[in-house]
Amino acid sequence: MKDDNMIQVTNLVKTFKTFNAVDDISFTVKKGEIFGLLGPNGAGKSTTLRILSTLARPSGGKAAIGGYDVVKDDNKVREMLGIVSEKMIIYDRLTAEENLWFFGCLYGIPKEQLKKRIDELLELVNLIQFKNKQVGTFSTGMRQRMNVIRALLNAPEVLFLDEPTLGLDPQSSVEIRDFVKKLNREKGTTIIVTTHMMVDADILCDRIAIIDHGKVIALDTSANLKKSIVGADKRVIKLEVSNLNGDMTSKIKALPCVSALNQEEPTKLRMTVTGENAFDTILDAVRGLGGKISSMENLQPTLEDVFLHITGRNVRDSTEAKIAVPMHGPPGLMRRQQRGR
Ligand SMILES: Nc1ncnc2c1ncn2[C@@H]1O[C@H](COP(=O)(O)OP(=O)(O)O)[C@@H](O)[C@H]1O
Ligand SMILES: [Mg+2]
Image (cartoon, rainbow, N blue to C red):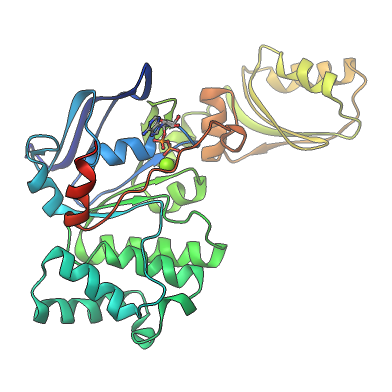
């Protein structure tokens, strides 16, 4: 393993027929880092994780975890990994303990050790008092906590979380984020998390790669990504026009000083603008179009603004088709799946 890089991804490509779902992606993840792959549905996040998890073969490029190549040393790689897929893998009819016992046995963890580990993990996510309750009676948030600790039974050095807050209510999302942070802090686990939720990436990740159409379009800390779109002559502004209409919006969007625009509400536009005179230019243009300006303010940039600025699109509006490809956790199941890859 070179210096302190735990994960090294170099010019990774995954082609389905003629289409590159992953299109020349490179990044490194340091030991103990929480690294985010942020992007809209269909961006290629899960496919990237599947390759790193040894569940799919790359069409080009390479990747290594702990110095082990994901194709050549796939068994070694799997020993280091815990994987939480987009699809929850949990048996409702079994109790919390029975579920973990089942998966632990698939991993081949010695019984005494497994017994201890199950209690430790249930403690870690505050589910110890539900140890003997059927998982079918759990809330979605509790089930997702179970789903995450299932991937931790073999005490992996590296954990992959694919959309860990998908379908969770805000409170459960907070719990999962807190838990992932705690795990990283206390055990030093290196983590890659994929998400299309800005807030996950923002709160959780030390560094974020923004992925779009299979490419890394930006990579940095959240703070630096945000800083990159504001400066002496760059800002994020919100403009409220009480009689805003479609024609006005498209004309404002076409102004050279407007680099990206998103209509947040019927009368409100959020945009990234460049140039010292951007404010005046926009005010003049709107008035010239007969627009009644109710307010205009400078905003703190968000990751959403960064994505909008770079792609011209809103993450939420990116509606590429999405194929859910289940990834299975325990090594036994993974090997069986691979025969078909
Ligand atoms: N097994 C597959 N066969 C064909 N196309 C696929 C397959 N898996 C994913 N794709 C396509 O690859 C693209 C990236 O998918 P995915 O990695 O799941 O994106 P994300 O996780 O960012 O939402 C999508 O367009 C998806 O439809
Ligand atoms: Mg996905």
